[in-house]
Image (cartoon, rainbow, N blue to C red; front, side, top):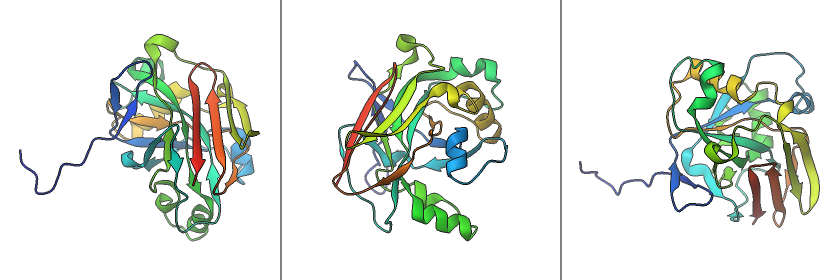
Length: 227
């Protein structure tokens, strides 16, 4: 097969302890999956999980500089557990979901909050707020064959050494299995998909010069510098 322009590289993520990489197809994100974050964003109504997407080429490896994006004056951090899928399907039962997972990573859902607020107020999509260049920082993936499937454990984020987000994976409203099951009812989940599973309370603004660090017990840590 020939292409009329140079073939676009396949986005991928480092796999901890190996030279191999995890190829990425799509990035899905679960919205408002921690109750305290739901409240801090002005929502306290029970509802089923909902999803939005980020572009695969918005991934940024841990240890990188994060260029402050244009068209925002209110850039926010959101620390998240990331699930890497090695199998997929439609209508996956929750009890079968863990068998589809390759591994886990630590991610940050960077958000242009002012653009998101404007979109909400005017009934517009969130894409400009969520899927810009470098909007999905991520650590190396740890295979589930090595670490199992963490259902609890501290998840935290600090800005310049000051902890801003501090929660536990067991605070998720929909656990990993339930999140995958719900996602597979809306989309056919495929190998290579990443799922950012939501953020605990404490999201906030970052500026140029800030060093953002975070981690999840048993999975790893992440660090980026806003430039």
